[in-house]
Every structure is written in structure tokens, then in C-alpha cells.
Image (cartoon, rainbow, N blue to C red; front, side, top):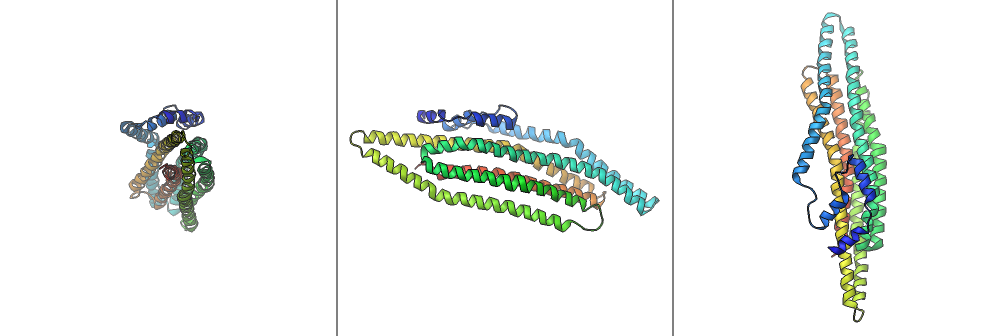
Length: 352
């Protein structure tokens, strides 16, 4: 354990801690303490604190969105009443004009809600990429202690490619495409003619296909290189230990020290990896919870106003719900790609 502590002391976690403070807005998450606790076989957090964080996040999100939900319900109901009354008294032209007036107000509120929620998804993915950029040097430096420069260099290059792919596919392609999808679905309700449904369906299918394909390809490459690269490093380490053990007199001592250093480096590597996974889940969990709660909230609004509101108003709410599903999926894919990659790299490079 002392060897592991000395190895960890050689690794700087200042940049990681600064990034965690910027991501979470406070210094409640001490990355160094999490790594130290994991190295000593201790759980760095309690289930009660996690549940308390989840409950507080739910309550804060509901409190923030409560007024928006009430406004949307009232506008939908008032619009339905206004449209029906004017249709009876003045004719279809007045009813249609009243509907468009209410629709524009309703659309403004939906657009404001979507823009705010989409910003949460975008900020989460952007800061997640920044966190991985500062975590990777420390993590792969610890890998070099137990696996050597070969495995560390190969996995580091793969992680840089993974960061680039997530940035290009999710941040630069998927999120703008989801914005376009939402606007097309909303614009399609301005006219009684179906004009943009096929285009919106195409964008929806393309976005999901691209995200699933990226996830499958990158995880497949991760597994393939994990089956080959660690074996090469272990052969080199085994050869070094056996050669050092063959030295007369001091061979057994050198061999024991080398094995101890390799195991200590492996312990630090896995602890840093586990702390990185916890940090990613801790950071992404709250935005994912907000996205899920908002999606459920708008689904509930759609169910409440459907019996009394115009079908086009209900379709707008459905468009927002589907857009939030895509945003949730994008953040979830970005989070899981890094979590699974760190877990696979830690498991595949375990010193036996």
C-alpha cells in the first residue's frame, strides 16, 4: 500500500480537481481523496448522500419548471376555449386567427424551454470532453507504471480519437440536428397540410443511427485492442521480471521489487480509473435526471391537455418530448462511451 501511495504522489491531480470544481460549481468532490479511499479499499461515498443528491435535484428541477408547466397548460386550455367559441360565433376565419395567436405564444414558451434544456445537454457534453482531456494524462501515466509505454501510448491515442469522435458526432452534429428536428416538427403544425413530417422523420432516424453506429464501432475497437495490446505488455513485463530474477545473488530481490512496483502501479491505475468513472457518473447523472424529469413533465402536460386542446398543440408537445428523448440519448451515449472505455481499459490491463 505504501508503494501505491508513493506512485500516486508522483501523479498530479491539480488540473483534474480544478476541472471538477468548474463542472460541479464547488469543491465537494475531491478527486485525490476518492483515489486514496479506493486504493485503501474504502467506498468514497455513501448511498444516503447519493439518494439525497438525487432527491434534491428532482425537487429543484420541479420547482424551477413548475411555472412553465402551469403556463403551458393554461395557454393550451385558453386556446382551445377561444378557438371553439370564436368558431361558433364568428366563423372559421376568426377561429383560425385566434388559434395562430395562441399557437405563437405556445410556440414561444416551448422554444424557450427547449433552448434551455438543450443548453444543459450541450454544456454537459462539452465539459465532459474537457474533463476527459485532463483525466487522460494522469490515468495513462499510471498505466505506464504497470503496463509500460506501449499499452499506455496505444490507449491514450484511442482515447484522443474517442474524444474527437464524441465532439464531432454528438456536439457538432447530433445536437444541431436535434434543434432542426424540433423546429421542423413545430413548423409542420402551422399548416393543416403535412409538409415536414418526412424530413423530420429522416433527421430523427439519421441522428439515432449515427449515434448507435459510433457507439458500436468505438466500443468494438476498444475490445479488439484490449485483447491484443495488454498481452504484449504483459509479455514484456514477464520477460523483465524473469531476467532480473536470473541475476545471481540479488535476482530474487530485484524480481520481488519489480513485481511490487507493477502491482502498485496497477492498483493506482484502477483506482484513478474508478474515481474517473464515479466523477463522470456523478457529473452526468444530474443533467440526465433533469432531462428525464422534463421529458416526463411534458409528457404529463400532453396527456392532460389532449382531451380539450387542439391536436396541433398536442403534436407540438409531442415534438418537444421526442426531442428531449434524443437529447437524453445523446448525453447518455457520451457518458457511457467514456465510462465503458475506462472500465474496459482498467479490466483488460490488469496485471496477473
